[in-house]
Image 1 (cartoon, rainbow, N blue to C red):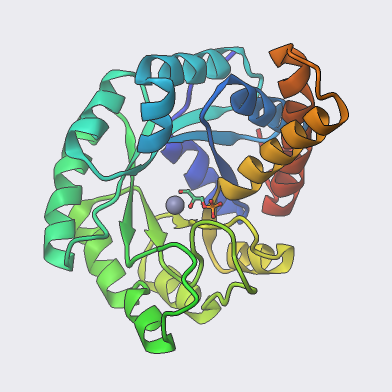
Image 2 (image 1 turned 45 degrees about the horizontal axis):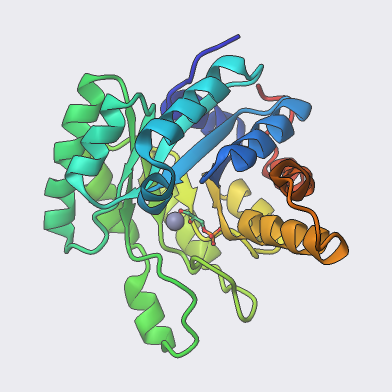
Length: 285
Ligand code: G3H
Ligand code: ZN
């Protein structure tokens, strides 16, 4: 039995040994259980992450409570992380509720303001032993209509990344390299050279967001170039929805939530296991 570990404890090991930790978004008990049982079966460390929306839906007491129970009962290392915290007070609340890692997303600000916004959180989180992820560049949703130039403009600049990490003291950095949140309409075009260039100038673990729907080979290549944390939300949501829909189509009169949600939980576990295998964190617990 081990308690929740910090993001740093997992990511520094992953960075050193060239694999990635899967960070899966959580909104309810079934998703958390699916993630933990997948990680346990593969003897892999894992990150449970709750977005501000997830916290709003479930309530911070429930999310933090479930995360802590998962960390205490799991036989693999688990971190509880705030995903895309855009609000200072929300981050403070997560620290108070026992999150062991937080993301402060100041990507909407120009560089100088993003540095100030992020550093304020880093100073406080570090004082209580919590790891901090920040974002530089803009990881948006999938937008077909944006031009190549517009796309380039949102991506992380390697030199700015160096300055940002040095000045904020942040523990890990989410970079914009061509992935996007949500369902891709075509194949994502990842700028692998940019990952390499950032890796050469920045020494903290790098994080890939918007990783659902990214082909297996691209994920492996991104990891080989220095990505140490991979965020997955959409693929798990889609698996959950498919599981519930299929069950109800076959059993339209069923009313027992356990019977309705059980198959979806099992399907999510299998989908998460496939991701963990790609990330290379099997037997790294
Ligand atoms: O922060 C969450 C992730 O970036 C999830 O992105 O929904 O495309 O998997 P995704
Ligand atoms: Zn994200």
